[in-house]
Length: 596
Image (cartoon, rainbow, N blue to C red; front, side, top):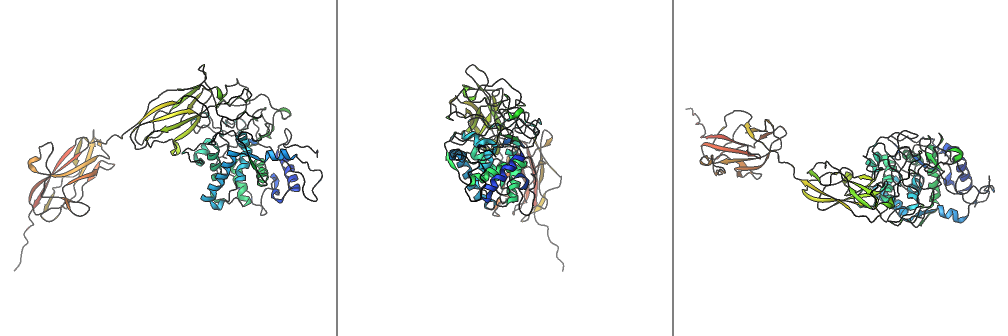
């Protein structure tokens, strides 16, 4: 074996077979922790086969980096003298994880250790997956809150070399309204994020583009179904659930073992970027490697392992070091951003303007949002990112934030969400749902990481319409009669209708009124005769907390009598103006016959 394999396998070599050879070398040269990580012997001693995932893989079976960790110099007696070594500086660089990304992994581990202590989730496993999925968020290009500066999008899952997954999020996360794409540093497909999304940084938002949120969500998935990740079979099953590929399993396990041997934090934006020629397909079906030609059935690169001029579709990382991630910065050497929803990225396209060229946000469509309490707003906030010349800018993160006193929320109870502009420069917010609080508030759209004037959407929540009735009628014609000191045997039952249809949920009032005020607009409550009882058993002659049921019916509580006889009136009124007056007759008790 040549003494200078380097820190990555050479072009086209990251297949399952080569991974097995490298893993075998790692097993021979390093600690026992690497034993069993080769693809052909990753099961435990009992030979238990990991259970295939019961749902779509988290990343949709998308592509991933197949770079392996650097081989360390032999350091124990009996090690093969033919094993390659690496300069200390190279090994140290690969062991560096961007500070914010590393912090997110460790906080996710702490959170899961508290909520699922039996899972035994190590943060190094999250780091291994993050390395393979996105190269640690493209070397740590994240802001202070952990959100990536530019989209990290996997290939369009249109069935062309990958799984076919039609759009599930309306393009809210991936900018594609036709098919789904894996999103963010941990590469969640939108449909999976809808189930596993978490708020890892406590900002009230579940954002797959945020490393804190994505790391916690990934940890929650890995710990699902009662898994104990200290058990090898559980660990394998969890990783395969992320991307059901034996090569993926072997690659993640190799980085997992590597990171367990020691890591350190490096400044955000300075992490080592994966080799663009080392990208494989989770389905084993070839792909565009982000800067290369379309892969073959083994997931290799194009002709001779080299790529053509296809666009980087985000999930594959960036082929060259990126400029300093200071918000608002720009550099003409930065690779062109993805054009969400543009189709097969192996087809050369006209380069889109970089997100740094966005100069303004323009509202699109309806600007004033209105909904009734408890319902969804019919219109969704939409803005278009434009250059100074008015041209659309794709690939821009737009944050929508609810501002003001309201309980209206985006999906998942979020008050802030992030959308990505598509090829038309438009970013559409997810559906907004009104709460029960009426009044006005604002939805503000801003560009993440850029000083661009915000776009505001005035929003109003109106009160629910009050159910009304225009007619009331008894449901039977029984004569209501009782003796003094007793109660009426038959309950009073009525039905409310509105325009001939049953009126459900209509508020009603029942009052015992005096006969001489029956024709008045506001009749007088009687102070004698029939009565109801309150919760303490005391007489009460007006009931206000009444409401018709789903069929528009209302049955009054039991009515009692005092010592007064005669004909008395019960008046029922409803919202909407319906009234009904019912006669109640009270008599003396019947004389009892005596026998000599």
